[in-house]
Image 1 (tube, chains in turn blue, cyan):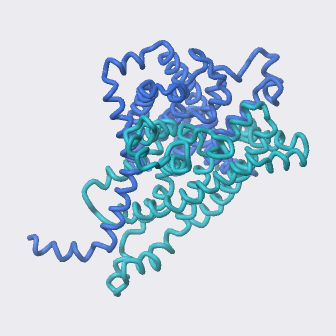
Image 2 (spheres, rainbow over the protein chains, first blue to last red):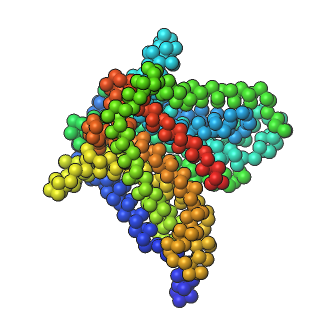
Image 3 (spheres, chains in turn red, orange):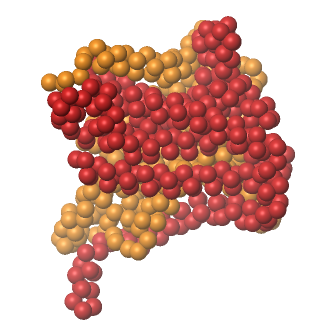
Length: 282
Length: 267
């Protein structure tokens, strides 16, 4: 049997396998894996008791609470805005649609520090938006709302870009059938369209949330960075580094890493669900 | 044909346009409005300030090193994964994607724990007198970590979809490995490759979190352009910060236009 398959397999193999795989593995090990291993090793050195003491300190807990709250607000915003944008871009034709579509990628292309700088100035007391919001008693800069705003901006593309292709695949005839059978447009959306895009929408929300938890550049400008109130976890880790408290920085970074990996797994599961779902509804 | 009432459609489009104007377009416009708020001369003075020029130069240098390396890595990874079958391919693909889901600031901390003075390699680096942290190598390494998936992610799916028939035909006809790649594979993936390179460049020049950990923010030495923006902002030189930011914004807009053009070509 081996004599029968071996020549066929040998013929299928293209050259350069060892070189390309070797290069890939070497690069990944040196650039990605060893540095991550250094962080995990540091965590192991701290030990469970030391780790717990750092992570459960009042300042660290407050930082996690601020980060999670703001990320939840940002994700809730993008869940609605992203869905609206995906819907409008797929189902409606209007002048300037291609520009609107291209604008959805601005938050990825624009450096986060630039976004943070601009948002901070826009919403500060003498900025375009701040001039309106401040007299109304809605301060944005130096509040959790401001952190959420920065997170929301930097994670705009995730929901739009995951829902868009699924909506494009969805046959409008399904909705027309529903409406022929007497459904209102709202009913046909909630009963026909929404179930079809649900897995992709959730996957997009998960990645948006994950990105928000790790965001740093845009937030340091707008947050004011007051310990216990507007200090995010990533910034606390950064401050610990500047104090040469490497244990403190590593422990907080490990918690963020744990969040990121769990959310990566969740988003992968949701995405494979979405892929199967797409195959079924097409 | 659509049975949906027209008025609700127009309402949704208006809502989408207004929200996008407020949250995406306004920050973009505001950057230029503030950068030029004191006129062209002040703008030019801000850009031509030696520290700003040095930051522009350093950021360009980092991109010039990182992007070609990333292209080579992306091609190697895509060639290995898309054109061959081997155990652990799925794991390899996930590993390539890892940097995308890790916060850059965590990447910076990882590198500091490895190459810093108290880091694992710290004593050895001091012995051989090699400065990685708070110097160009550290900035380049962290940027490589953060941008690792960018080219591979664009090229890999395309190479997978194209299969290996053409390459196998070329090999059968006696082409060498490099010939196959240059004459068969490269023409097929060139637009995706360029697209990945554009995204990688945009990300490399804008990297902030990771670089801020490893750079040490030494003015005129290890200050990249995004870090320089923060420095100017903290100096309360808002117009200077916006002038520096306008260069990166312009680059981002160019990247977006290129992206739109390349997406059309990629088909």
